[in-house]
Image 1: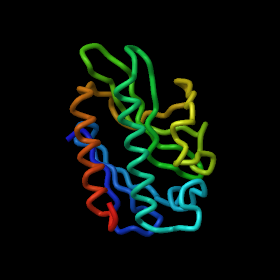
Image 2: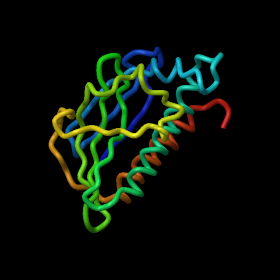
Image 3: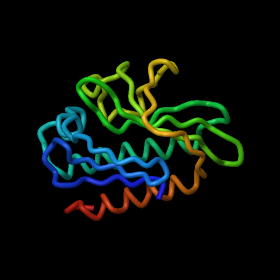
Image 4: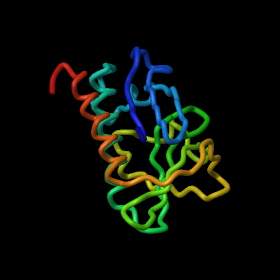
Length: 162
């Protein structure tokens, strides 16, 4: 499994789970900035809102992966923290593959990003502004997209209204 994202024991803190066997990674993050997004269902603080925003974020990831050019770099945010942004770094490669690793940057913080408008954010992170926490591995675009879509399907099954 390249990656799996799920919500576990929804409470706003340490409830967003990311696992990746190929990166030897298991991260817990907060859904707090999903909950307080005032541009999407502003009067609601429910797990349904969080799930819908998370699905939108994962769809953003798919779009970035599908459209990345060879030797181009993109960042896929996951951990929206007060002090940093935890994210995947992907670099386009040959043969419909990407190089991927996970790390963080202090150039962006969770409070400065509106998750419902993630597609409007241009992550301009210099190499020395990114702290890599895992090894970099090469994966097929189709396989990682398949994994992300499986996470989306799992999240959709948790919605009371589909």
